[in-house]
Length: 178
Image (cartoon, rainbow, N blue to C red; front, side, top):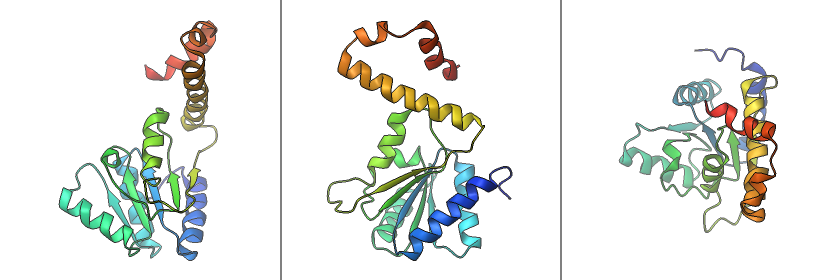
């Protein structure tokens, strides 16, 4: 399977991954779609880049083996579906995180990024978010940004912050949840 309409994003992805691997780095690649994860891991195989793909259907035993291989530096690219990655994984070997697509809930995305920021992490982890222009992803990206700032405002400003939002801002916040 080709990755139609993703060529621009895929090129950026390739450049990033090739650079990371050349520098003997390790990267976690998160996607919310198992199908996309499969395509990416097949794509990496074709490019002779060692990778592994963890998804919801991966057995605990296989998962442990994968984590061991990644942590041991045997496999530099670890593709994970966001859902599967939600379970206590310790992946401190990673010095890069790539979010191949955006998930509308920033908390889930941050939780995924935190997989690489576990205790014992001495490296600086770089987070890359790949966004295709003029797509739903761009809207999601804007939504995440506004949600983050909204969340910050609510946390720091208390309930009052919500009442200060205009109707349009509130509408914008909920429109993607339909």
